[in-house]
Each structure stands twice: as structure tokens, then as C-alpha cells.
Length: 171
Image (cartoon, rainbow, N blue to C red; front, side, top):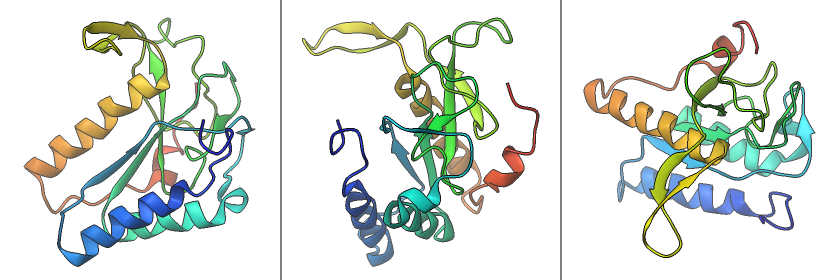
């Protein structure tokens, strides 16, 4: 849990990544976050976690895309922070083909930006062997990877306007 399911000082880690980018030590195109809170939000929640939201805004202004899982609480109207921040791409989970394949556990609603595979995702397990996993934390890395591939093809590509993404029909 991140500070007992709050976000604690995780924003300091993001600020460190931004510092590394600004110093030229590393070039950062995307920040991936598979974490969340016990609380869910149907509206933007930047006000609830101002330091963390500010770090996401700083990354966005530097051209770094910030991607987060939406949470696994089965909400049809709300998602977890930091997915509910204005400058974060929130990702829900699907299995198979839409619309029937929306994962039952995936939080969604008007703040959800994108969907990606999140059920029966093959990955490494704790014993070092391949295992299958379910969750929006399995879906969000697909989107982060797509962002990185797009930036490799088009380095001048900047993070999209997330409010534009949210203007589309919700699930």
C-alpha cells in the first residue's frame, strides 16, 4: 500500500524523475504509475493531493506523459487518484473485444481516458516463472509502452490534452 492507501509522499519520487530529466542525466518520455487510493472520484481530484498533482503538471509541461491505472474497485462512475488528475492518462482494463469485454473490476466513468488489456495478462511471477495477472495495473503499462513507441517514431510528439480525451463518450 502507498502510505496506507493514501498517496503519501510518492510525489517526491516523481519530482526526482523530473529532476533527472531536467538535469539531462536521463531523457524521460513517460512516467508510469500503477498505484491508487481507497477513495474514488467522479471529478478531477487534483485538489485532494496538490503536491502530487503539481508534480504531474510539471512532468506534463516538460513533455513527459504521465499514465496511471484507474483502480480495481468495480466503480462504473469513478476512478482512483492519481488517474483523476487533470494531466494524467487514466487506464481501465478489458479482456477480449469491446464492448462486452470491459473488465468487471475496472473502475470507469467520465474521467477514464483509455482501455487496454488487463485480464489474464502474462507476466513474471514472484517465483520468477510466468504467471497471469488481472487488474488495471496490468492494463496501464500497455498504454505507457504505446506512448514510448509513438515518441520513438515521432520524438517531437507532446503529451495529448487529456481533457480532449475525456471529451469523448464514456463507458
